[in-house]
Amino acid sequence: MKNLKWLVYLVLLSVTVGGCKMQNSPQGGNEEILDYASRQIGLQLAEIAKSGKVLNPRTIKKDGTTAYIDREDWTSGFFPGTLWYLYEMNGNEALKEYAVQITESLDSVKFLTWHHDVGFMINCSYGNAFRLTGQQEYKEVLIQAARSLCTRFRPAAGVIQSWDADRGWQATRGWKCPVIIDNMMNLELLFRVTAFTGDSTFYHIAVSHADQTMANHFREDYSSWHVVDYDPETGEVRKKNTAQGYSDESAWARGQAWAVYGYTVCYRETKDPRYLEQAQQVADFILNHPRLPEDLVPYWDFDAPRIPDEPRDASAAAIIASALYELGSYASADKKATYLAKADQIMASLNSPAYRAEAGTNNFFMLKHSVGSIPHGAEIDVPLNYADYYFLEALRRKMNLEN
Ligand code: GLY
Image 1 (cartoon, rainbow, N blue to C red):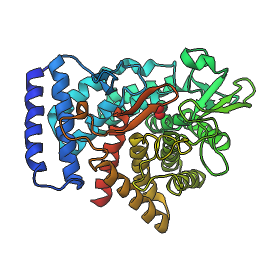
Image 2: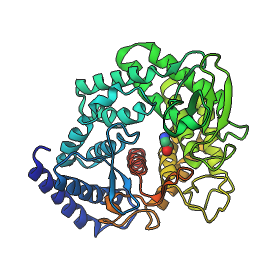
Image 3: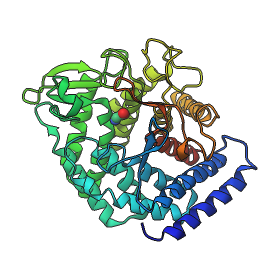
C-alpha cells in the first residue's frame, strides 16, 4: 500500500475532527451521522492501514475478528463504494486514496462470469469511482463487466442466470438455471453501459430480465419468491424455491428489499410505468405488512415462525430506505409523502443505539444486527458491509432531497 504513513495521518486527523464535531450535535441529524460515519470508517481504515495490505472488510467472524474478503466474493464492491460515498459527502482525500486502491484491486472482476454478482461488485465500486472522478479507464471496466454479465443471459428464458447449477451447495438443489430476485440489482450496470456505448443489447437484456422476473417471481400480494428456476432450453419455469429465506413460500426480507430497489432503478432508466407500479406494489407490501415491526426494521423473513423472537435484518432496512428515497421522487404526491416519511423513520431507527454501533466498536462497521443467511447458518445478527453501503447511500439521498 503506498503512502501508508500519510494515509494513517489523514485518517486519524479526520477521526479527531469528526469526534470534536460530534460532541456538539445530537444523534441522528444528517451532519451528525456524517461525522459519525467519517469517524467509524476512518477507524476502519486506520486498522486496515496497520496491516500494510489492501483489505476489504465484510463482517465479523464467529471468533470476533473481522472477515476480509477476496475480490471474487459477491460483496467486494460494497466497502469501496462506501468509501466513495463518504468521500463524496465529506471530501476527505485520505478516503479517496484508499477508495482508489481498493477499487483498482478489483480490476480483474470485470472478467468474472461464474456468477451474476459482477453487477453489484463493479457498479458499487467502479461505478461510483467513475461517477466521481470521470476517469475513462473506470468506464472501460464497467463496459467489460457488463459484457461478462451478459454471458449469463439465457435467450430462451429471457433471463440472466444467477448461479451455476453445478457448483457448491447450489448443485444439491436440482436447478438448471436458477435466478434470484437479488439479480434485479445487477441491471443498473447494464443500463449505465447502454448509455456509455450506445449499444442497445445491454438495454434489451436488462428489460427482458426485468419483464421475466415481473412475470414469474411475484405472488399475487406482490411478495417475491427468492429463487425461480428456468429450463434454459425451453424457457419454462421449473421451480420456485428459497435459498436464504425461511421457506419456499415465505417472504425473505432482503429479497423484498432488492425487488423494490431493482424496479425503482428500472423505472428511472426506462420510464416504463409498469416498473413504477411494480416498485410501488412491492414497497406497499413491505410497509403495510402486519409483521413489519414498529421501528420498520424487518425481521429477516416476514414469515419467520418465531416472530417477535427472530433476528432483525438491518441490511434489508437500509436497502429499503435508500430505495424509498428514490421511489418517493417518482411517485404521486400522496405516495411520495408516505415513502419519504417511512424512509426517514427507517433512518431514525438505524441511527438509534439499537442498530448503530458506538464509534470504535463493532469492528468499525456502522450498523449492527444484519443477517446473511439463516438456512446456511451464516452471518446471523452481525454487521455486514452492504448494510453500511446502503445506509450511507440512503443518507446521501436524504441529504440531496433535503438540500
Ligand atoms: N445477494 C445475496 C444476498 O442478498 O444475501
